[in-house]
Length: 250
Image (cartoon, rainbow, N blue to C red; front, top):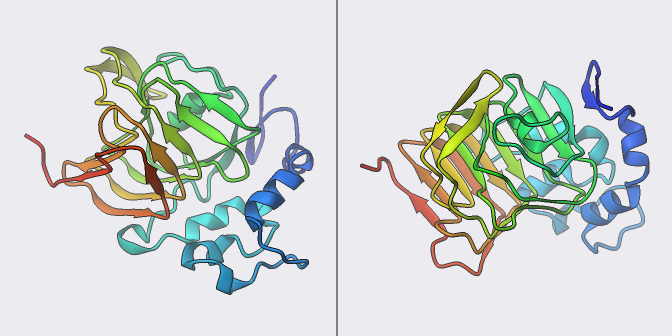
């Protein structure tokens, strides 16, 4: 059963309880084979973004610090910083009536949210995932795969979104039909193009430390006068159309 807390969408657990079973996973991710006996990772081993949050193995208790770490054109992107935490505990999906605890439920809320995952999961979406403004999807410490033969992520006319630490691959064309675009709107969609991430008419977007591969169309498309975008530290593989960036598309 899910309950609402003052700082979290919760799974009947406190923050520390949720992470008590995952300390080793978080530690392994944070150190990435760096041999260091202290709690601080040497700065010379990390790039500018990683130095900002990952230098201390206790980063998982201060996830929102990542919101201070963007560089480049999207340097002002804060994502869900200052909002509540939302924990994804359910990999299932419903494009029009998502269950609380699923990824779609979190990204369609109209408030700032910092979204992370309770455990490793594979998510095959029923239709494109339309993300609202002021959101962070934070895959750090977990092995989270999105796509798997289904549609993937859409950012359309939104502001202030961070996507970090996900495996996005094998994304397909979305179906024509009804899709929730926010908690207050469900509308007809003509079907997404099969991109890993579509950024359309949006601003202050930061795409960082993701793995993208093998999508039907592009891995990341940035179109329709999107501005203040940073795409950093991502791995692109097994694809012939990595980035598509243009001011307009007629």
